[in-house]
Image (tube, rainbow, N blue to C red; front, top):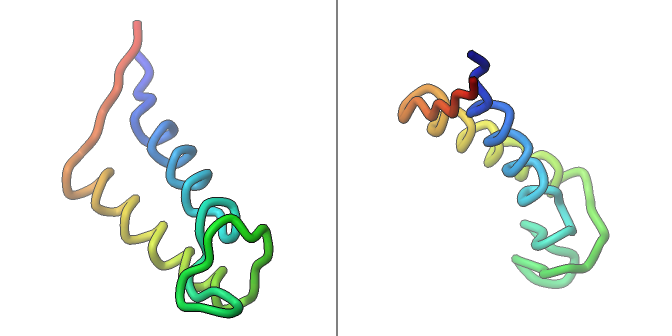
Length: 69
């Protein structure tokens, strides 16, 4: 049986937290910019910290498991 929980959670968080795709924190002109498709080094760092925190919560603290087979 394969555990697809970590893979699915990581892919969804990666897509949602890509800087500039849905939102960018901090933005270029405001604190949060939506759908601007631009990025900066600071926003990459902020989104990386948010990604690491959320993936830690989902995989270690909650323990999400999706098994197949």
